[in-house]
Length: 435
Image (cartoon, rainbow, N blue to C red; front, side):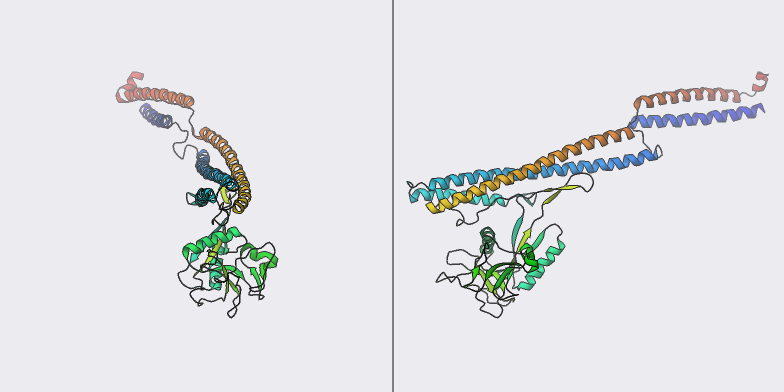
């Protein structure tokens, strides 16, 4: 009986020794990692919270990066605007100098050369991109060359399909309501050398020409915005814009003439006009078989670019980065200093353009300030979450060291007891010794 009790005791001590070894290994593992949670079984609840907060921290870090990228984008825009302001200011100075009655035409020619170079530099800046995104967004015009004849209805259907598939921007056949729009589109028409469709017609009522696409098309309960009434000898609707074609010999307006059967749709032409420009308007049938001099082989697509939406937190929150623009002068006919009257006109236009640049920089500055505020909030949230995560997963080294010391003492004690029990069990005459 005594032998059996001693064997049972030895087994119990051996079990305690194994358990002490296991605990010692666990404490060493935690101290080596510096973490409370090394295995999933350590604390399932804390592990779940750790994984959740680690994911939020990673997302926060990415949002911080996107805010920094947006800040770089806006800083690039602001630098470009500052450069344009300097250019336009110098152009204004040249215009003032050209107005001096004591200057000769030769002097003005020199001013004109510098003036044109500056205008070209500003135009190039307006087309700058940052990582593929236009610095100056709002409206854009694309001359779509189909390389084959296309009628008005198919052109409209193609643009409408693109608009339906793009949730961020609005696309439509171009409507031209200002000299600036006309100049930018005519510039592309001249470069590409094709006729193209625009978003206007008088299909509903003969002679009642309206812009029927885009925001202008939604006006007047969806009937469009009228811009011209009548035929060749008609009249322009107040505050609207027209660029009807003119006879190359007489220079007199000869469009819209409704010369064919149902010439109800608006075309913009690459044919050179008497004043040396391209981009005059004609009325044409909705067909793809007009003569080569008139038949459109593409269309002008106008795009209202949506404001950039910047993510502001690790969830779905965002804010708007407003578009920034400045007035461009694509053709030298828009501003010039060749004569005193031209210089006077240019100076007035440039003053307005400079005011617009100031407004655009103010808008950009407001967006930069918003980004800085959002970044500070994110940084504060990031630090708080890091601290919270640290409380969840960081090991209390002092407590862990104490637990390891206790485990070491228990292990040593168990080892001594086990050695003593094993020594007793190995002696065959232990019963007599006890007696």
